[in-house]
Length: 379
Image (cartoon, rainbow, N blue to C red; front, side, top):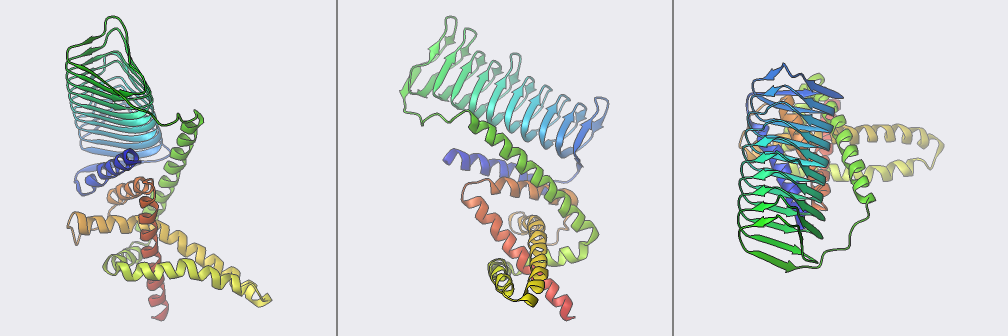
């Protein structure tokens, strides 16, 4: 549980931080392809069902999608979240990857942070600094200049590591090409399999540890389905939010501003509307006339809830700018909105805390939307 909370919070922070960055290019769509002859001269933020980056990105690359391929050079950091992630290009900075199936066959000048079901680091891969990996089945055959920390179920090491290695896993195997430049600490129910030819230059410390019961193989399938569904839903909300912002911008901004200024008041109002209104609608179905009114009220209610769910992402962006980054008068724009909605989607995945946090955002957006409509009708 602590590991899940840590990783979810970490990736949320990694997404929120660029919200205040300037000079960014954003590309979205069902599929996005950056050709091998193309170049983005600033940061690139992109999302889609399939994303293929074969060209050059001169700044940071942030990508979210179902199937992600990065085969072009990245001049700064790479952050990717998706179902399948394949990185085969040079990354000058850090790599932060989260997905169901991750394969790396490249160079990274900084650190590697990866979390996923199946993680494969191919021979020839070079990571300049430290590596931190959490996943199910992990295969490492690269070369790391720093230390390596791995937490997984089944771990295979057959590469070079310059500094300390710490592994927590049910099964650990060191292949014949393993070279560990310092000490090797591992936590497992049984001793690691160390094949002939493996070299460990420091102390070897075995800590016998009982591991939780192994999850069924199907668990990763359902994780992949959940991840894909989350991505599709997030893309839908991104599209809806941008449409709302650009076609009803003044109205939406007024709702968001009111919710930001009177957050807890509008949250309380939204709570009442969300849970009390359905009771009134159900009671109205008791009479023939009431059925017609009740259906109309039900339609209006569902419309309000959908609008509130869309505006919740915009509200989160406004609150982040106002309270985290101290930007009172910063105008919401398309890439701020997209990054905020992606961050909110990740936060929602944090057990218990995430759904409550998101629901509070929806309460506030719903209350402010109702207040705005009421004022307009009154006028």
